[in-house]
Length: 123
Image (cartoon, rainbow, N blue to C red; front, side, top):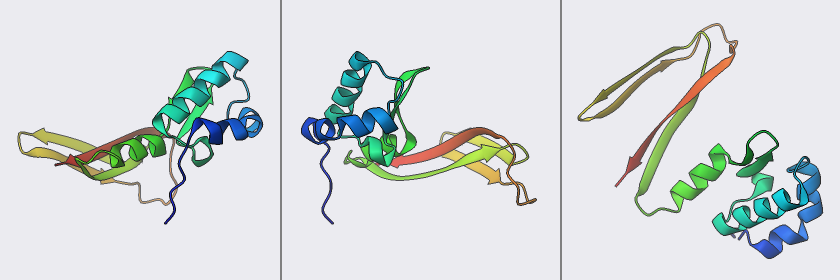
């Protein structure tokens, strides 16, 4: 598979689309910073790895964090899920590791999202 390399040139060529679709509320300076950070870390705004929020600024999304983790040679695996109102959720932390009990609600309808969890294995 041919991996797309996210460079500043790639981002600059798509600057207008990024401004319109991903960073609508960014000032010119904020957009420049956004493009710089995306290129520095090789994150693709079109894959929702990184995006801009007028409330908090530059945000690296779940897929971006996973992308960065997978580049680390120590990363082995990750198990994660969102937790919604009505789900049963318990975490037990011991010296031997972490145990997660997550039972989604059986009604088939998800309530309001209240959090997320992840267990990452490194070696």
